[in-house]
Image (cartoon, rainbow, N blue to C red):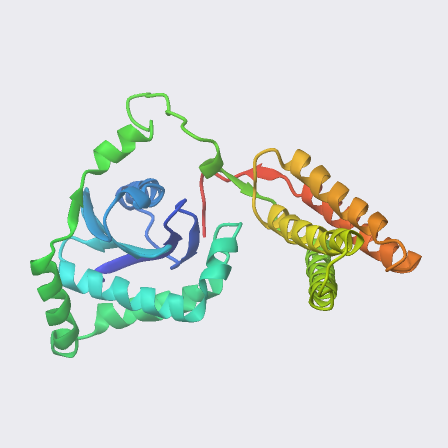
Length: 303
């Protein structure tokens, strides 16, 4: 019988599942353990790097480092050293395949589902590998566990804290963890690229003007600021598109006004077509920011 039954990769800060193995167990006890694993995944940020929890005939193990955690459902006969060795192997394989930017920007469950094949292969390898083949790796993990034992968690306490038992009403703290941004669109990516280009052009022109102004006149100081301020505003627009921020509409209008006024001030140093280009990019970016709203994160995920 297999000792490692199910494994998944989750994002620590919000418990978003990134990839998972395909399981073929449909017993009620196993499905209940899967539900408890999802509940525990949403609270990993509050727990230490290694831990385990018992659920009926199974054990849930987790190992987290940075923004990625690996979790597994194992039989009670599975040694803890074997489970943590398996999770550590998965962590190294996953972080070697995907960088932190991709992981941080993932907006939908199982965004890296193609990693499922690696999880399945690693799970099969550990389930069918002899004790002698695993000896060196297990000894190292066993020493680490003896020096720093994993945390032992109570799944019942976790369920109560999430309002899942005895009809308790869930306690809502801040709404942000339950929400995520809508997916990035192709037009949104175009607006980001154009915004970065406009920011670079403004910065280059502003630095060039400042370098050649040994005795800066008042008019030239105004021109330099008219280049630098829109440059900063373009970068802020990129941030507002990628990440949620309170009072977004007010900030978008402020950045748009800064870019428009800056380019209007530069009339004479720029021709009409150049000004229209910068202002047009600012309006496109503003529209993309305001249309990319928050949406509810799904409460239940399936592979």
